[in-house]
Image 1: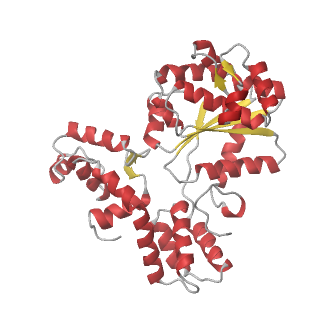
Image 2: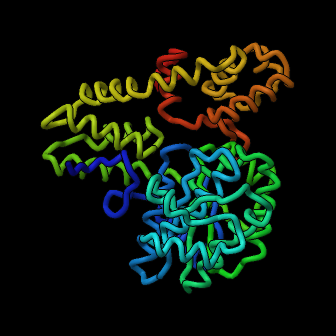
Image 3: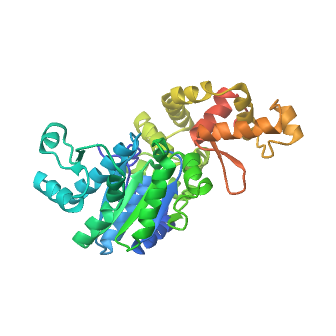
Length: 382
């Protein structure tokens, strides 16, 4: 059923709002043969941003191929390379003969093969005939440029959940090989978009370890303006003959910190709760329902925290910034400045908080922050 409030998949066109400057930036970078990295929390619109960007580029007449490399389940070098190569093959070919031809021509000196039996039984378009060696790794990393040169068309590879690269054995050495391959192949025929939902893990790879230095451009995803969100939601309700007060909707957008995924989900619930005017009661009921959906996840997140970690989280919600000050350490029983450093690192590794460019703490999930305030710490509602 068509709905104005899509939260279960990436969107383009009229359902995609905001992020126009980011779309232009990414488009310009890719058009110039540059690589892009985007790391934002889960469900902040990274894939919608990329899909809309590619849509805009295509309607402007640009010719290219995209390949999405899903890394959620990648835990080894072998898994990564097979996933990487398979994504490229599926973007370029559709038949067994085409798969076999590409592998034979572009990966001839490797242990990568197209196995007809594996394709028939498991739909695998790429397999290994032997254990990986150094040549296999280097050859597969250079595969996109060879195939792009052979076809004469640009390839953009989107590596989803790229932070999982740190699960690979000897991942730092592997990334050095990856980095060297990109540095040696700056022809403009192939560009990478590194996407990550684990903000701090991505910061570790790209900012602390400084991989792909000067080879990748970080694009930040800004908040969508609350007025644009309000316009989108009001229009959506009008399509089904329903009305919501604009000021009321503006307050909802601010509560969710303009997170369009949560807002669309919330609006979808409201849409099913009433046939006419959307009241405060409807909004509260929808919020309670949304909380109930996500509460098990939130409870699991806090159940894994130590008492000290909970105290630092409470200090964050109270607006504290200088955690190592004697006043904050004493007030929240944080023990010592050395312990504060460990607590900050722990909450960052759990992807609960991050620190912005001013080194101020930020809770990554706006609904989790609301739940913490109201239901866990029972703080006064803002």
